[in-house]
Length: 196
Image (cartoon, rainbow, N blue to C red; front, side, top):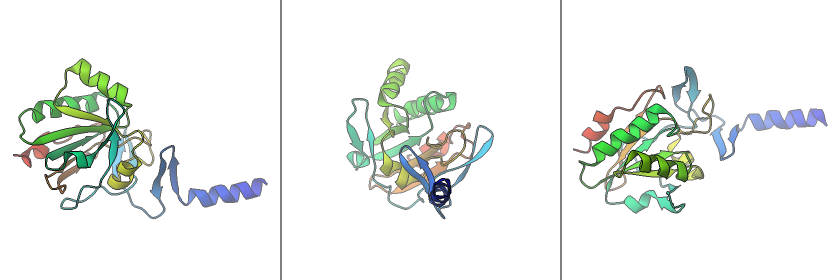
């Protein structure tokens, strides 16, 4: 019995890393390398290329309703993706994009993390942030698969890496940045420059 179990575990281990949300990294898939708390970590896949269509996804809003990327078609969309609002860098990125978004025409900023919708809503209310849309990815398997940003290993395994993706009015990716060191803030100026 022990031998069968050991063989089964070895076979399963070759298929990828499993999380509560599903398979993080399939065999042979080469994710991106990032630094997480001083350690090398890997994303589940490659971040989508500039010029490609932004993969469809559905996330959860503050009222527990499902919100799809397609809801914002016709607008320019900034996807501010990060591990958790409970870290100083993530909180700073939401505040920064909130300030930037106030001056941008036909643009919406979606702040995407695995935080529960209640925590996201509370954070934005306490901080007085009204120019960003917080969306939870806690049950968004299509985002994890489409964007390849879920951490497949390391101390924050299962959370999202830090990235910014800008999508134009037609749903095409016009800018992307995967922040190499998750403790660093994204390049706000570069992201906003493509919107001016």
